Image (cartoon, rainbow, N blue to C red; front, side, top):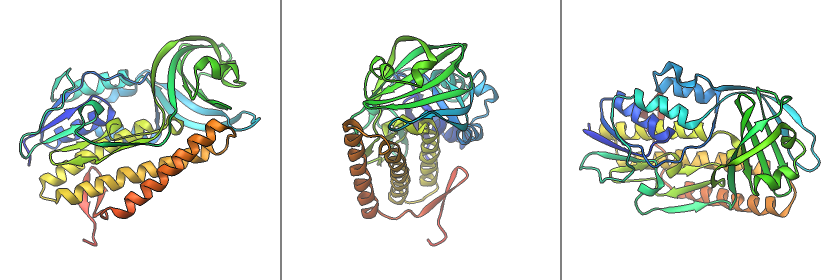
Length: 341
């Protein structure tokens, strides 16, 4: 078994990978500095269960806002629809500040990629630390985030999603009549000016707290001799699906399983092919889900973004068809060879 694993990056995927490898007996070092955390995360019930399986930290969700319904106004002249929902809203930096210190590993605040010693690994979840790779982007949209004040009538256990002609809004409560607003396609001010649902929940728009690409994207290759990419360094999702955190957890689990299987003598090339297939298949499902949402709204901006995602699906299907077949299946946190092999 390799002696040491270097984790470069401090996000959810990196933290999950570090936790599982440390439990498996690897000596893990993590360089977690330099990361701009997302203001809030939406954690589905399934994502919460995965995190509880990976970590022993019981109070990790303490203080999180519980969401029981999603109120959606989507499409031309649509009226708000109330949908049952179950999830938690928590600040990413709050969650990570509870998870990283609980791990019995060496940590630093730098974020510089270091070459792995022969037989060891570097898990990269920071784009700045990636080796030479190609990034494939399926959209052009940018998202901005703002802290907001909610009015007294805004439900404390609801989130709101609304489309407009030039983009969309996603409003998450964060407790004490405050919230986090994600604006995609145009500025918060411009989208709120055309909003009939989200604008009614907001009494005050705070300063912007961040900006990030909101289009799906992936790098190739995802792995190579001595390294494997995971988290946002590997693939990133449109926030419309609300499953970015869940995908990060699953990537961290799969990356750690690849490293352990390689340490047990399995072929690295076959493991890399499996990892690539699983990550790429997840991206295809995400693109298809996004196409469902984006095709429901009329307008030039929506049609342009939709076409880029359709191109992404065609590209991904071609890449999957030309790649090596997966020869493993994930059982718990371990990769096992498929019975056919």
